[in-house]
Image 1 (tube, rainbow, N blue to C red):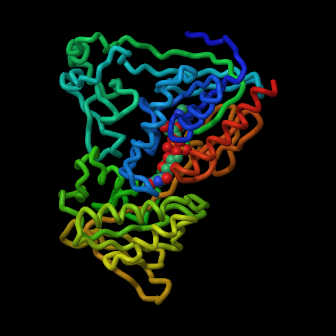
Image 2 (tube, helix red, strand yellow):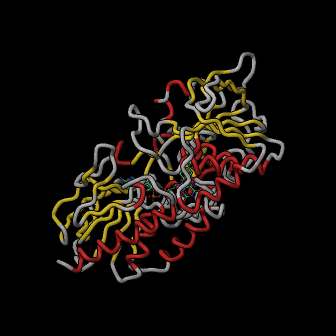
Image 3 (cartoon, rainbow, N blue to C red):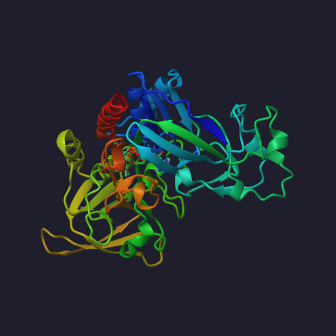
Amino acid sequence: MSEQSNKRSNRILVIGGGFSGLTTAVDAAETGAEVIVIEKNPYFGGRVAQLNKYFPKLCPPLCGLELNFKRIRTNPLVTLYTMAEVENIAGGPGDYSVTVKLHPRYVNDNCTACNACAEACPAERANEYNFGMNRTKAAYLPFNQAFPQKYVIDSASCTGDCGKACKEACKYGAVDLEMKAETLNLKVDSVVVATGWNPYDPNKLDILGFGKVKNVITNMMMERLASPTGPTAGKILRPSDGKPVMNIVFVQCAGSRDENHLPYCSYICCLASLKQVTYIREQNPGSKARIFYIDIRTPGKYEKFYGKVKDDPNVSFTKGKVAHIVQAEGSDDVIVEAEDMLTGAKVKVQADMVVLATGMEPSGTSRKVSGVSYNGDGFVLSAQGINAAGCSKNPMDVARSAQDSTSAVLKAIKTGQGR
Ligand SMILES: Cc1cc2nc3c(=O)[nH]c(=O)nc-3n(C[C@H](O)[C@H](O)[C@H](O)COP(=O)(O)OP(=O)(O)OC[C@H]3O[C@@H](n4cnc5c(N)ncnc54)[C@H](O)[C@@H]3O)c2cc1C
């Protein structure tokens, strides 16, 4: 058990190391606060690290993340923990006691990311970073540019009959199969909860065919398919047979704005689909895309982006809620049926692949942090001393997440000063 009871003023705990958590950490540390970031994954960056490009500039998201990583690496006031989760938060503003569980990584700081352990490892696991669309070894680097550049061993996927091949293969002594879980006791003045979101489970959307109809994927899977670091090295190929996708359908509000699923607008899905239309149109100039929508929502400056995509004659928009998605007879194509709300006509479209624009569900729905308050939808409710930042609080884009994090920093600093 490790102890950290050396209390200082303005000590801030950040839960979640996505864009919001990292922005909170650098902004707070650059004002002189001491910051501890707890991330449950073996890497930092959150969902943004899984995107292919991000609007408004459509640049690779790792550029933006890398700026934060650099600021963190050079700031001694930030302490980072991966594979870490809060077990309990007790106390009050200016005086919180937090218990954190550190899960074993089985790889220590000697790791040079040389890949020898993965080469020697005989066991495989589904790659959750790519939403199961490919596999990694049980000893793996989460992705090429992962921060930290450190392998991890998924003990649940170890076969146990490998004679500890990964340990034998590592000439730096980095593999430590005896590593145990640890408990960390922290004293902090305030907490910022930046636990973000998860894609809504598409299996719950019965009529939309995910898992039953071939070549129905989600918007986050599309991000990975289009990414040069994804399972197809950036080629948008349909999963069932690797055919290049020339004819694609996007289904908006897959779960969002639906009392039976997510009763709110997920804010980002229209923009995400418009962005993904550009992925396919740029990659395959002869391709066609169709978007089924209830309302297209592109707030503020994003309206211009919508206008640009709308001007493309190979992109069409149908206002109507999709009623069914089924497999085409005798092929791997997908049939989408809907009613065109503007004409009243029934529409039936055949496509190579369908993308469900699944909404953003707060992490608090599936995993609540003890000591934190949530509303009925699982979003974090800020309180004095424990503030929410980014998508843990509301669905939002990266720019708004960054602004929101800066405002959480101000509140956290005020709490520390007021003790
Ligand atoms: C399909 C799609 C495309 C998108 N494209 C864009 C785009 O192009 N441009 C744009 O601006 N936005 C885009 N977004 C939105 C963007 O993903 C979010 O704005 C961003 O992820 C918000 O960051 P965050 O840090 O708040 O949350 P997250 O990215 O979810 O990060 C939260 C972090 O907290 C960690 N965590 C969760 N629970 C715990 C816990 N209990 N303990 C410790 N750690 C925990 C998670 O592992 C994660 O690392 C897109 C969203 C979707 C759905």
